[in-house]
Length: 161
Image (cartoon, rainbow, N blue to C red; front, side, top):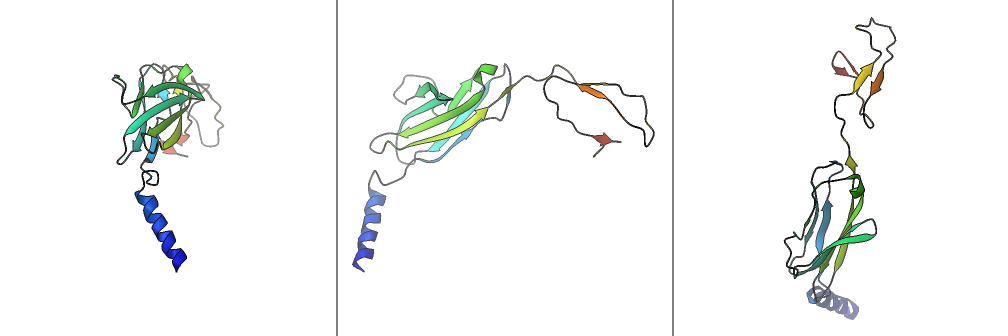
């Protein structure tokens, strides 16, 4: 009985102490799976500080920190959004957002996401080697030419196979 009472008191103290209250919650990254080369792309790092102040947000590509946001900065940047003005192949990779709450807890959380920059084809894919029409049982042999890996769907009289 005495042990249970002590555990309950410890839980209550932990809950109401600044270090015991977990205030940095729901940290996640909203990152597009892919973006077109030359287009702007926004990567969001969302979080809920509850009753704490933000200390800083660090952004990494791979293992290298490339941007740091602090509310004390006289900067126009957004604490939850990283914008790349024109995506290039060089920005492909794994991104990490590290959010830190201010004193007294300095709780820190990291989330990761991967960005892929793609080159869209300039036109439709070309189909070579097709005959004007086919009879049932005839073999169809054709070559599809496109930039990049195509997504292929087979259809017969507009019905997917």
